[in-house]
Amino acid sequence: MKKMTVAILGLGGRGLHVYAPIIEKNAEKMELIAVADLMEDKVREARERYHLKEENCFSSAEEMLSKERLADVMFICTQDRDHVRHAIAAIQKGYHLLLEKPVSPDEEECRLLLKEAEEHQRKVCVCHVLRYTPFYSKIKEMLLNGAVGKVMNIQAREDVGFFHQAHSFVRGNWRDSKETSPMILAKCCHDMDILVWLSESRCRRVSSFGELSWFKTENAPKGAAKRCLDGCAAKETCPYDAEKIYITDKDTGVRHGAGWPANSFVLHPEEEAVRRALQENPYGRCVYHCDNNVVDHQVVNLQMDNGITVTFSMCAFSATCNRTIKIMGTMGQIEGDMGKNMIYYTPFGKETEEIDLTKLTTDFSGHGGGDVRLVQQFCDYIMKGKETPSITNLEVSLESHYIALAAEKSRLENGNMISLK
Image 1 (cartoon, rainbow, N blue to C red):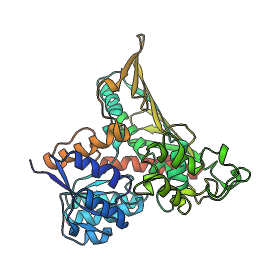
Image 2 (cartoon, rainbow, N blue to C red; image 1 turned 60 degrees about the vertical axis):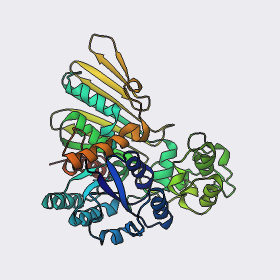
Image 3 (cartoon, rainbow, N blue to C red; image 1 turned 45 degrees about the vertical axis):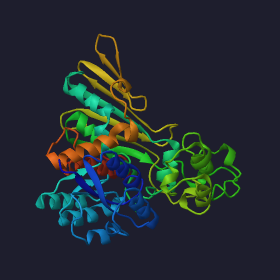
Image 4 (tube, rainbow, N blue to C red; image 1 turned 90 degrees about the vertical axis):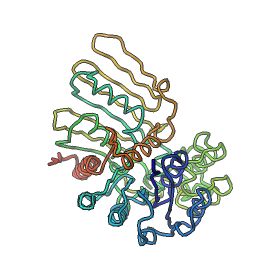
């Protein structure tokens, strides 16, 4: 079988650290041909590691997209507000696309991209990796087999993690909705997509509440410095201290071998290099003295067309990054903890059955095993025309975006009910 050839536009956390290694590990089915990024060291890293031709390594999206089509598909991993213009240019060049989420925070841009893809007959899939995880795939299978009868209510929760919030949504690239996307879209369009998928229904009405409550100047502890390494008097008791998160913490610190999150701003995250970066870059700032505006907690209520009611909660203030879910139906209930890879199934009037997903599969790397399966299934979709139930083509994905944008509109309007027509 012919290999799927790939060009990656954007060598950030997803392009360089997730997709490129997956392509390399699946060399019998796919091959990385070309890359582009604004940062010269990342382009050089990709060129050397993946043995790319120098003429196929570019310093910008515009330079790559000025060339004739270089590969079968393009993985677009640029910033949120660049996605659509890069995607349209790539479609017009003849590429099929794997597009990082979110597509765009602008509804009209979303519709424009869908129109372009349909007119040029290009396949566009959006990276809703949760659909491809063993966790949600098993729950979907159980629902299709009638495990709980008719689904009546779904309760879902995303625990962002205090360190993840500080890294990505206070100090980092997604801190300002005007530059990127509102939190409910940037972080939770995954979740909106899963809720649509599991309920097998479009959404009729949305309401939402949430705000930025904590990561503000007035909440800074006494003696807090503007930068964590500048002799901060609150350092010992502050869990958001940059030195702790990026260097000394046993789970996230480079001193203990962690790659992410420090590899977001240092290509080879060794302690001294990370320490130097924290003295200058945005990630060394005090979380109470940043230019962030996205929420740190939000709740969303959904009424689906088929009558299912849904509640979703996203909160920064959790010890770990995790998702949990409870699905209640007329004949039973399902509860799941993605962090533990456990599902608890209780048919009414019977004992609870524990389903340990670690006994069914072993690969839970990258979003609970979703990253690898996403790329593999996308390859089969492009090369064989094999469309699995998980495939999130553009039209399917946009439902989650419309829900998230409606939720944000409701939040800004003090919880007003928003109708999705």
